[in-house]
Image (tube, rainbow, N blue to C red):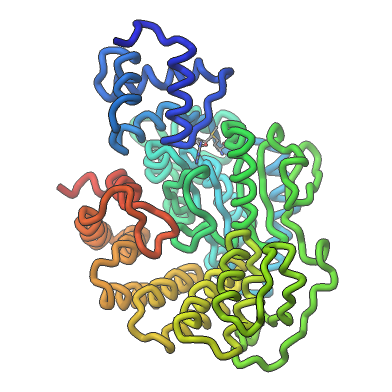
Length: 501
Ligand SMILES: C[S@@+](CC[C@H](N)C(=O)[O-])C[C@H]1O[C@@H](n2cnc3c(N)ncnc32)[C@H](O)[C@@H]1O
């Protein structure tokens, strides 16, 4: 029998449970929040008391859906449009103009990620700023990925309806220019801005990133504001290290002023603006001014001509600092293992060096194919999409019936904004592997984004049916660690699926 009040020992148990099962951190100072969240969740799940709910949580195996309910009551949804004026000043005066001018002469592509986006106000603020800074926005390929652990927040974000409270600090022109009044007193964001942001479920502590599959790679700028403060020191370190891998060299990480402790961000240099500190990922010109630009002049694997990747000579001593194993340049499996390890550490340029070197030598076919798969991902994480595409094409040329190769090609094409070709490639992947859940999910997402609701529901429903054949905790192939249960929850929580019986 549980006692009628929650004692410290119970709260300790509950906080450990929540950390293990959901990845949320509740130190003793936040136990009041934990109690409040438990009370609200217990009501929603249908328990008579929080104590009964806690006993059930700790002694049975709650379903993912119940954990989602608990998570939704334990996360804090404090956010609003145009939050943190000094930071937005720095963004609009310096950072965004810098990124725009750097990319204008190139592929006109910019990638942003709002990690811990809550109900969308932050991501839409960014979209509005870009709309104002880029008169030729249509000619740009802008990606704004916005993710959160709380599916309810994401549902609200996707719908794009906001009450006065979300505008509490916003400039007066905002509502007039970018919103339409709605009958119930709320304001609806105009579609032109809404369609710039893609929302998705992602737990920063548990889930895999960077990943092409969830569009969290090769970011120019990542917002992770007022989120790190809820993590344990170990979780914070892990999240910052992973976020750093999602950012290209010279890209930016934005946290809130209270989170901007220099010691936490060794991979970044801090840049000070009035009232704001921003973090820039080691720019090549700062950290490695002597990075060689020519080494192998005419390799059999020649990356794309413009913005070409020029492999450096393979230097076992240089990489020994990352992985203390001795690797012979002519030993493909050792080179692959080294490349895998470098990839895990986020050293994508070194992965590319190692694998280009390997590919340029004779290697057994299976190593060769594996190398193309890893090299494509490394190039994509470096933002070198032409090279990533070239890798996929070489991979397909070497193995024309590998569904994974077509799927990877489709993801790269999506990132380049080549939606039509991407659709064809996803379909080819499905042709070769008819139960390719991820490919159906991607096709559904494309249709949904294009406003083709019936087509989107059809693809998502097929994905749902295929997902039943997996155990919930089973990791889906080609998914970067997404489990069948997680993808099921994501699809089930989509507002458009409410109409599908
Ligand atoms: C206080 S809000 C910040 C929202 C926004 N970034 C801002 O600054 O206005 C914190 C957000 O982080 C999300 N969050 C908390 N833990 C998370 C986790 N492990 N993974 C992803 N999001 C998380 C919460 O759901 C919540 O939406």
